[in-house]
Amino acid sequence: MASSSLTTPVMKEGECRNWAELPSELMSDILRRLDSTDILENAQKVCTSWSSSLRSLRISNCYPITTDGLTKAIVNLPSLEELDVSYYELSGKCLKVVGQSLPNLKTLKLNCHELSCPRHVSDDDALAIAETMPGLRFLQLHGNLLSDIGLNAILDNCPNLEHLDLRRCLNVNIVGDLEKRCLERIKVLRRPRDSTDDFPYYAYA
Image 1 (cartoon, helix red, strand yellow):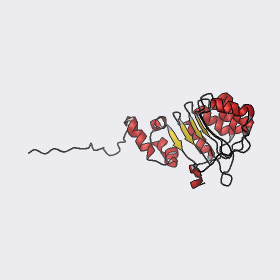
Image 2 (cartoon, helix red, strand yellow):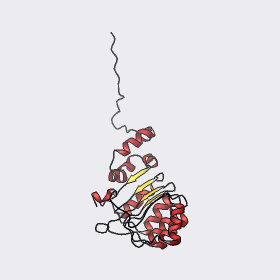
Image 3 (cartoon, one colour):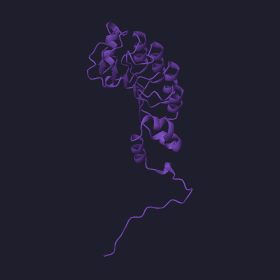
Image 4 (cartoon, helix red, strand yellow):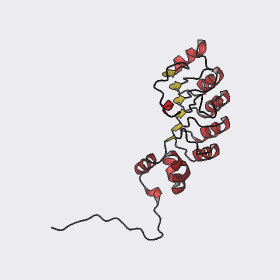
């Protein structure tokens, strides 16, 4: 019986693989196996088309990456729809750059912890979110310092927002007209004093 075998083409010395020719499904699978630092610092250098394939990025508690480095990297990820930068120091200016660079952003997680977070989201930061991220559907701001002013700005400018987590945002007072707005607009509302038992970040905050 004749035998058959599969052969793999041998690359010649000095020949480089064109990573851009990989199927998008395979590229996405490769990116899922990399940690955040590898994606931001190395993957984009290997193939710029990887940047356009990335839809979700979580870099919470990722202190080796500087704020400037993070901002510059995110500018090159225009297809991002989900971004988690919890416990990370991002100024209102950086948030504006992020929002302006990610037109498809639907989910933002920018959580803080009273003891471990280097910087908390203020009303200025909430205004930056409101001005540049109108497509948000899911916003998680656990443990931050925004007030009713910042929350109203977000409600004014993010018409598609459906899920809002404000647990431990103790400067927000959801009563009266503000409560009415939230209940009319938001499908899932986590209030400042709601239980945090199901909050995943406390495991490593």
